[in-house]
Amino acid sequence: MTTSVKAVVTDIEGTTSSITFVHEVLFPYARERLAGFIARNRDALAALLDEVRAAEGGSDLEEAAVVAALRRWIDEDRKATPLKTLQGMIWRYGYESGELTAHVYDDVAPALRRWHGRGLRLFVYSSGSVGAQQLLFAHSVAGDLTPLFEAYFDTRVGAKTDTGSYGRIAAAIGLPPAEILFLSDAPAEIAAARAAGLKAVRLARDGQAVAGDVASFDEISVI
Image (cartoon, rainbow, N blue to C red; front, side):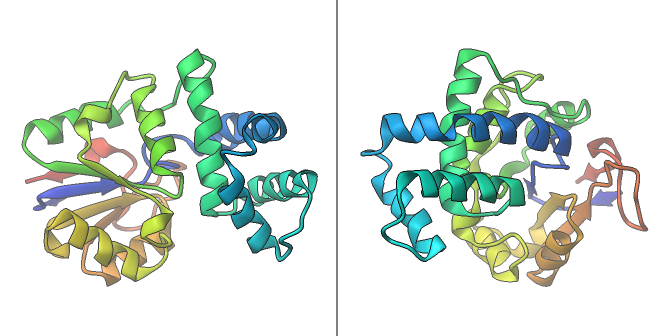
């Protein structure tokens, strides 16, 4: 597949990195450490914990109830900014201690380096917090990939299924939507990006491809 663009925005889960790594490694790692992390940092986390209380409809929720809510959100894979921020903080320790090393597919790093070398501007848009995104790419099995990316976007710019999110990303990048290629494994995200005027390609890493999908970054040619 060949397309003419000036920038590439990539999702992470199911696109650059396996869903298994996220759900079977990262999520359990954070889930097991939530209570202790909050207990050690409750003052610094006060505003964030109040966001969780507000979302749960009870400003007087005890800390144990907040932790229980966050664990439930993890189990539901809820795209909630307070949860994603907390997870990113916990994962930072895991990456920096060497307990965690991020998975990326074998085709990802060579393609990103190739595109970057040709002058394409590279960005990330994921439901995980910006901090978590940076940690993952800084501690990947392919080495530190963060120098390849110009900027990162998370749910603060909007939901990934919201067409308006992609318009805001295009405005932040400073390019017409038609000059931006978005990569994701999620059909609803692809549809939202296209509705905003971006070019979009779906990665079918699980083999469940339909017309127009690709199985790896190797199948994407940008000019």
